[in-house]
Length: 382
Image (cartoon, rainbow, N blue to C red; front, side, top):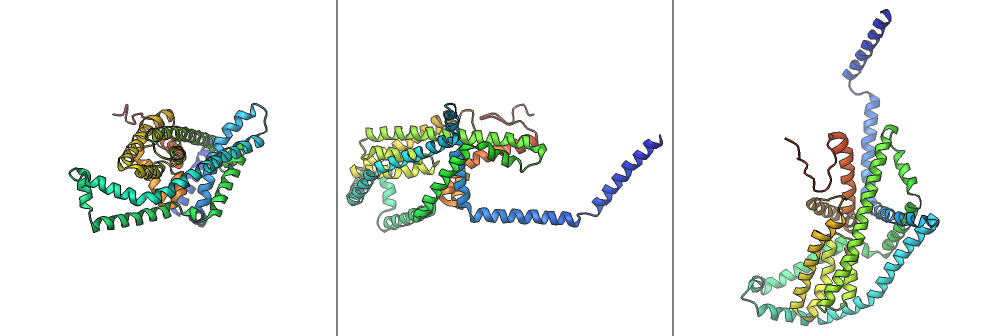
């Protein structure tokens, strides 16, 4: 009994020492560690802000690396070295992309010259078309902007469009930056796809042993979601390019193949890509008549409506169901903060962040099970 009493007394002494330490508040070591953590987070945030083009380019390289790794895994069954497979896939993809660009660039250049030459006549036809319909809604809108007010509005709109262009596409001012960015994406894609396990294990070594299993699960889930999103985007790009080309050919729009290819490539940029791709097609429609420009506009609206409500939900079935409002807000925020690169990375970053939040906070902290797409979060809650 004496040993038990001594053991109980020892436990009480340990509790009293803990209470005494708590009463003394933070020790100098605690203050120093906290200050070092805060300063480190601040310096890291400053580094990210200063070098955000590099970080966003690296994220695009990570996306491409995840996609290439799937192809490398498939070629590995034929006992082709991973390094050779990765280099062949990446170089082949960019060579195909550059080839399409070189093939379509002369057509777009010729049509842009014709557009600038015929634009005054197209504007005159537009004014005559509107004047013939002054009794309708179009005439009411035009009448409200008639005369000097219309000219002021057009000038203001041109300035705003120019400002947005300079804001969204600052990288166009430097060819070196574009080439460097492409080289970084190419090499990151190759290196990540050759040995993705090395980078995964390196990240896991940054965490304590008892958390590494959960971190591995989160990394696997994030990689799966990013791969799913990227495959979805590639399929959507192909589908939109084909459908847009067919529609423009049916409407007899000039440079339909080049405009369809442009629409497919810009599909990678959610929301804004569709608006950018529609502008040259509508302008080409104006070369013939305002009616054709109106039909082209309606065609683009209809195609993208079907894409958003039919194609994308089917492709993303079983994947991450991103809330539309949150998607738009994330795109706007990333575009304001980081420009064009931020706009391109907004949706995949949002998808990865949602997976991490659901697994690390909703499941581990709150204790709620992770919900699938379209599940009711209040089902069974009274």
